[in-house]
Image (tube, rainbow, N blue to C red; front, side, top):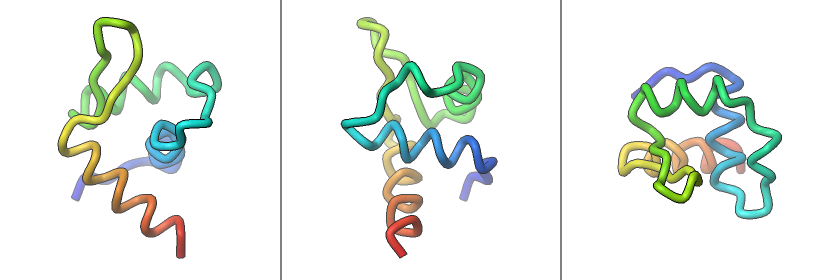
Length: 66
């Protein structure tokens, strides 16, 4: 499994929350997650999880729910 910092974990959880405001997410963390292959930037400027990112998000969300 990919080792993420606390901030990266927080951003992954925020991105999975449809009510989260993207402007509050640090751009540096977004860029790090892109470099890790967990996110990609769509042509419309929004971000989506890659297949790996989706799996990591599910794992983080499950742990966060405990």
